[in-house]
Structures are given as C-alpha cells and as structure tokens.
Amino acid sequence: MKVLIPIKRVPDTDQKIQVKPDGSGIVTDGLPFVINPFDAIAVEEALRIREKSTDTVEVLAASIGPEVCEQQLRTALAMGADNATLIQCDASLDPWNVACVLRAFAGRYQPDLILMGKQGVDDDLSQTGQMLAALLDWPQATFASKIEFLGSGLRVTRETDAGLEIVRVTLPAVVTADLRLNEPRYASMTSIMKARKKTIERITTTELGVTIEPRLQLLGLEAVPSRRKSVRVGSLDELLVKLRAEEKLL
Amino acid sequence: MRALIICEHDGKGIRLGSRSAVAFANAVAEETRGSIECVLLGHSLAAVTQDASTYAPVLVADHPALENPVADRYAKVIADVVRQRGYDLVVAAATTFAKDILPRAAGLLGGAMASEVIGHEFRDGRLCFRRPLFAGAVVATVALNAKPQIVTIRPSAYPAASARPERCGVTSFAVDEAALPKKTEFEVLQSKLSNRPDVTEARIVVSGGRGIKNSEDFERLVGGLADRLHAATGSSRALVDAGITPNAFQVGQTGKVVAPDLYIALGISGAVQHLAGMKNSKTVVAINSDPEAPIFEVADYGLVGDVYELVPQWIARLNGK
Image 1 (tube, one colour):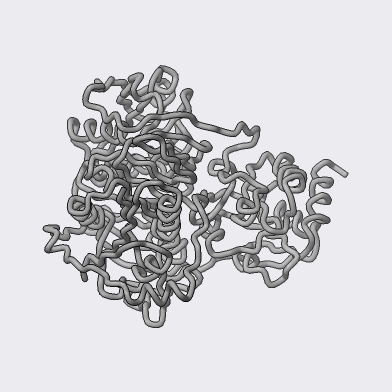
Image 2 (cartoon, each protein chain N blue to C red; image 1 turned 135 degrees about the horizontal axis):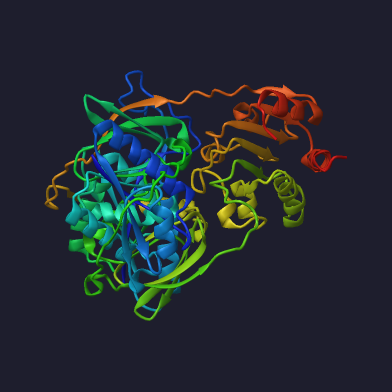
C-alpha cells in the first residue's frame, strides 16, 4: 500500500506574526518554520499504519513550494517517512492550486491513501483535502480522530460539531487529520542525521502539467489590535457591579 | 448577484448559523440588486422547509439517499443545483458540516472559495471578503477569481436574519440517485445530549481551563455557573487533552470559534490558539490565580484569584445568598 502525505511549511505557531508595513504579506525574516502541525499528525498516522500492517506500506511525503520546503521534508523523513518529493514551485498557491498539483502528482504516484492535515495553521482555510478528493473523485473523511482498516476500506471516526461521526470509505480515499488522531513522535538525533543523507526527489509543477491559476487572491493584510478594556477588578463584587452597571449584562 | 445559501438543519428547523448566512446573502443581494435562495438537503424535510421558507425562497433536495450529511453526495447535489440554476455566490455558516462539504463542492465548481469570512465590502464593484489568518492575529482582505464564489461565514459576524412577514416559495429539486457517489457509508453519529445551549450559539459562554482539576469540579464550577447564567460551556485544549471535557467543548483555533456577548474564562491561561476561538466575544471576563496569565491581556475585566473559591461565591450570589 502507498500512503501519500502532503506537507505544508508554516511559521512556528509559537511565533508572533508581524505584517509588512505595506500589508503585502508577513515578515518572514528570522521567522522559524515547521511542518504544519496537522500534517505532522498525518505523518505519524501513516507511520503507525506501516508499523501495524502485515503488508508492505510505503510512506511518501511531498511538499509543494520553493527549495526551503526541503527542511520540512527532512523532518518527515527523520520521523520515518520512506521517501520524499519536493514539487518545485515559486508561485504563491491557494488551496485550489495545491489540490490541482496534488491530483496530478497522485496520478503519477498512484497512492491508495492520501493523509493530510485538516487545515494549515497559517491560513486556517481547511479546503485542500476536500477539493483534492473532489478532483480525484475519491471519497473523503475529514477531521479524523481515529482510522481503522476494514477489509478493502477504512472506518473513520470524525470530529463534528454534533459529536463523533463514524463513516466507512472505500480506498483510494483522502483523509484529513484532526488534533486527537495521535501525538506525533519526535525524531531521534540518529534519524535526523540519517534523514540528512536521504535523496529527495524533485519535480516541477510544469513537469506535472499543471498551470497555476489562483482563485483566491490576497489583496492585503492587517494586524488585529486588541481593543480590550483590560480592567483589573479587586473583588468578585466589584466584577459583578461592572458587568451589571457598565456592560448591562447578567 | 444570485446567491444560494446551503442551510444546515436538525430535522426540525434551520440552524441559527444558517440564518446568519442568509443575512450575509441578503446584504450582498441588496448591494448588487441580486436575489437569494436557500437549499435544503436531507430526507423528510417538511418541517425544516416550513421553517426555512420564513427566511428565503427554498429549494428542497429531499431523498432517502441524503438522509445523512455525507460529503461526496451532498457536494455532488450542491454542484448540480449550482450548475443547473446558475448562482454567482454560494454561502454557508462555517461549521464542521460546511467545512466538510463546501470545499468539496468548490472542487467540483472551479475552486474559488473563501473560508471563515468575518466581513465583506465592495471595491470598485468587486466583492471582497475579510477573513482571519494566523489564529486571528492577522486579517486578510481577499477576492475570488472565478464563478461561483463559494464562502463560509462566521455566524458571529452576521446577526441572524429575521423571519419575513410572508412565507417564501418552495421548489423541489429532483435528486438523481443513480448519479450519486456510493463510496462513503454513514455508520453512526454519537452525539452527546446536553441540556445546555450550543456553545457557538449561546449569548453567554462559561469556559474552563487548566485551573480546573477534574470532571466533577468542571461540572460543579463551570457547569454550575453556566446553568445559573443560562450559558453554554466550553473549555481550553488542556482540559480536552486531560480527558476532563469532551472534544466538542474545545474553543480555539482548531476547535470551535465563539463570539458571545459575554465570555467567562475560568482558570484559562490564554494560549494564542485558545484566544483565536474567543477573541471576538463582546465582553471577556477572566478569573485566574496567575496575575501574569496572557488571558488578562484580552480580558475586559480580570480578577486574580482561585476559581475554586470565587466561582462558588459567584454561584451563591446568583442564588440570592
């Protein structure tokens, strides 16, 4: 079985994000980048599938973007992915573009399962997996908190607003990982060293025959200032007076 | 613009968030001299149709094969509706229902989609959307380059549409069962019954964090105060990870986004990811024993103290003692 894990490079979530003065983007100088945390969960799940399976399971990590995305692919390799491919592209990509590139890549690689994060923690769009499933005409199971193999398909527990929903999908399928699917492992120093020596395959979006035509156009960014009163009250009674008298609440 | 609202329902009526989506669509239609319609998908939709028709003209896709909200089927029907009837804008409230189904429908309809929209404007006649990025630290203005434009809106950003004085028309949409995808089988929804309001719809939310030590204390303190205030309950990720609260309680970047009139944070330190889920609340109250807790920076009123002492006192005051 072949499992494809698309990896997105995102700013470390502990970092404070600053907007460029002209609003055209964020300040990236000195900003540390990581694997999108939800994609790391997807990598971990693929590794667990491989560890539990009696069949041969190949885990391929792929990232779309400039050369620097190699860092995140090395992290995936250090975690235990078998192979990695960098799909080279310098253009800025929206979920539609990423889904189109991944569809073309899946056409070559022929995975049985595409496992990816439920959203990128940078743009919080949560679209790519679903669009990709539509383009491939595969079933999807989004926001997965549990994945079980059943004969020729999957039984997936999904986290929804209404509670936990269980669906069965046939393979091939696209599954997107939610927070509680697993806790990703840390790579050991030995595996990080080994991962440095591995060859990362390269292909361009042009070679995949995909033209990048953005659908979601960014017109500008602005930082959001806090408008809170930030009043410290000294007692519960003072708090209740404020809420009732000033805010007309309670 | 001609707008289509994908209405989410509970088998009896449409969800409050869908009424916010109607309000957004109404606003765009008014500004563009356009029109709106809504579509209902499901089975045995008579009651829901009655309810929905008080807000907008209704298209009904009622079929046993649509009994459960399976993404591939629902997306296919939505795409068929849009192709056959030609809408410029497709909108739904940003819930897990729409987050699952709409991007898939967008994948079938050309891929122009903006998620979690919190505002809109026209620039030189072009519809632009405002949406948060980076856990709400940044707001982007975006535009969509293809038709239809597909959007999910945050209900907190658009007050729910009110009922119209007269009912609107109802049209049924024929579902071709043979053409529906059959690769997904719905097994079960394990929903927890709660007597409390939905956390995304409540006017007051009481939320607990690491300062709460176990499930009993959560129920007594957070639940107790919530019940006195007719409020919903939520929690930080820390309590979900500790098994103290269920997954669906999580408020934050990767959980639920709430914006009630009053958000009461009890023993919540205020990680950026949590703040992303509640920072648009109208008034925020924080009680925490750590005077340096970041939650105080986003609170209107902060009280330094032990929730185990202060919350029982608060409940006692509400009980008239």
